[in-house]
Length: 419
Ligand code: EPZ
Image 1 (tube, protein in one colour):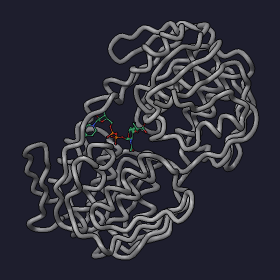
Image 2 (cartoon, protein in one colour):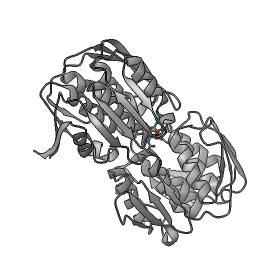
Image 3 (cartoon, helix red, strand yellow):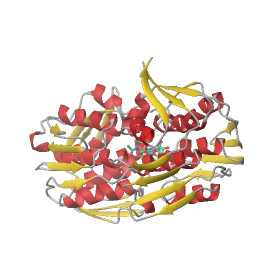
Image 4 (cartoon, helix red, strand yellow):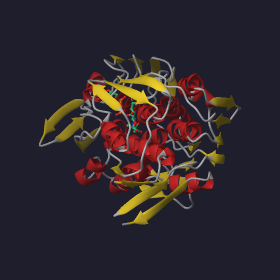
């Protein structure tokens, strides 16, 4: 079994380049199903999740090729199925993003219900309600969802009970080829939604208002493939920003859109780190002592839930008490027990965690309980005394391209070993 071995105490110094965004590329790859000609993508992060969704598309008869690193070519002209194998769908929840494109392209889909995961039950009721509003007929049996469009997809006005990122993306994709106009209200506003809308519009779609809570989609007859460059991963970038602050380092994070980092930049400055913003990069200087800050996760433009575990790791070693409230997922404190094993002083009650800082962290055997918790354990290891050994690396491989090389280039003492 592979483990990450992190020896704490090194300041991180230098420059790191952010890879393409996992949460943008996954729905965009799904959307390429709708193109009647091929698409070409650049800045594609080479992640486990990208490999997984590529396998799902291949299982539908679609050609997916990566001729070189961070490049992907997808040709959906040969699509011959609307029911991916359930063992592939089980590997990753985000595979559910193919439902909207399949309904739009094939008029039907037969998909295994996505499972929950460490951070919550993660139902898809908001997705399904949106599809039904577009005229989709749903039948659920033996864990499968059978979706058909007996009268085609018809535009509708849809109010989302929660600004779900996935539901906004899935329904927006289906609406792109529906007859008539669809209005999505209380839509998610994340930058990844804007990225998807930009790709869809390059394909010939008519999507307006992405990035706000009301999105208007005028259905078109056909979508053609397009060339598209994936936006930088704001969560990966944020993880390195926190690493710089925690280690008292001086790091330039390149290939960043600072406007996507506002909540984190505000919290880092509040904690006492120095943050310099440039057009496409951010420099973070750790001043050696950080003040505890409190955070409440919210849908964009609030503080991102995907940064919650990472900033909690920073609060653990900051001066004073801090509080984290997780409002987006019902079970996203799995990293608390792992941090406490290292000496953190965190107590939780329902969706809030109280952190008493600074704690003296001592390296030990820990595990990545989910993707972002894994990143938090690496951050804790960077400042802990001694050696931290992190297991269950498959979680980390899902969302962080070349994380060991990137951290070693910044001076971290980290290696991946077979134990
Ligand atoms: C996306 O997940 C991201 N994943 C998540 O990133 C991210 O944490 C999340 O958005 C919130 O920003 C991808 O984009 C691949 P949601 P998604 O639908 O779409 C509830 C990471 O670490 N909900 O906005 O699944 C749900 O249970 C991952 O990169 C329903 O109740 O998130 C949750 O409590 C983790 N019914 C809340 O909404 C639904 O039909 C937010 O979920 C859908 C969601």
